[in-house]
Length: 115
Image 1 (tube, rainbow, N blue to C red):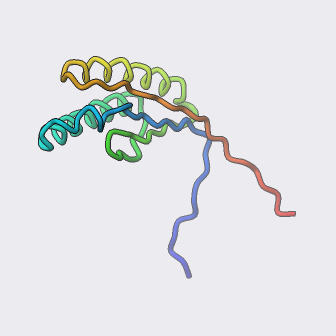
Image 2 (tube, one colour; image 1 turned 180 degrees about the vertical axis):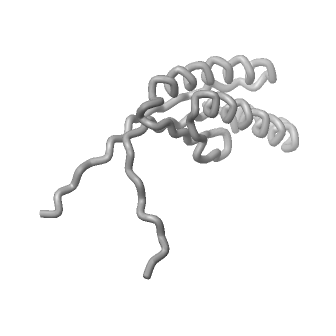
C-alpha cells in the first residue's frame, strides 16, 4: 500500500526568471559578494511573488521557477513585470551588468480518456 499523495493538476501560470550573463559578469567578484548578492536577490524575488500571492517553487543559481494559480494569473503577470523592472534597477545599483528574462507559460491540464 502506497502512502504517496496523488499529483494534483490545475490550470496555472508558470514563470521562469533568469538573469542573462550573470555568471560571466560576476566571476571577477569575490564569491562571498556574489553569495550575498544572490541571497538579497532571492529576497527581492520572493517579496514580489508573495505580494501577488504566488509561490516561488525553486531557485537555481540566478534563476527562479515561479507559480501562480489560474485565478491570480493577471496579478502574477503584473508582479513579474514589476519584478523585472525592479531587478534591472537593483542589479544596476550593484554594478552587475545583467538583464532579467521572464518566460511565461500557461499550464492547462489535459483530459485523457481511458479508452
